[in-house]
Length: 139
Image 1 (cartoon, rainbow, N blue to C red):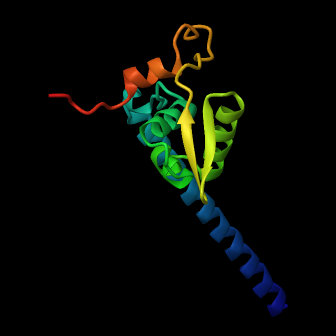
Image 2: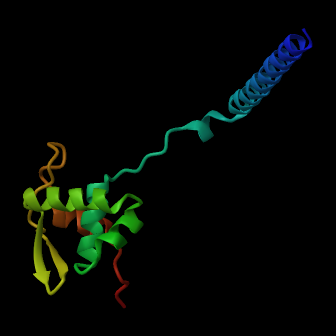
Image 3: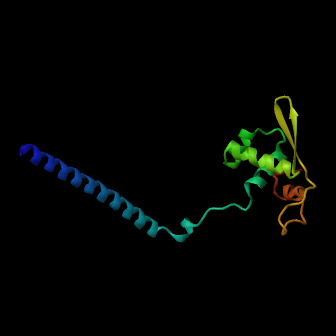
């Protein structure tokens, strides 16, 4: 009988502990919801950039044709594998020319290639680079 009562007490204790844990998690969630509700709508806006990762890669390669994929990944903020896919897509589409230079790759951007979207098709990749690329001041 004592063993049975002990088992019941342990079982009830575990249920109370679980309920307490669940209540704590619920309380944390309510606090987070309240914090979210108090944030200004401006701080909750979805973050975006005006250029895709593809454009970032082209701009970086145009700036440094010997850049490593690891460096591209670090600058763009994506994985090396994603950079590899982008470089492969750009090469297949004719926007990049890749040549081997020993163990390294050297890239050349085809500046005469038109941009792909119908709204920008009248511009070339070279036009984009001219507008966006950082230029050294001329004196």
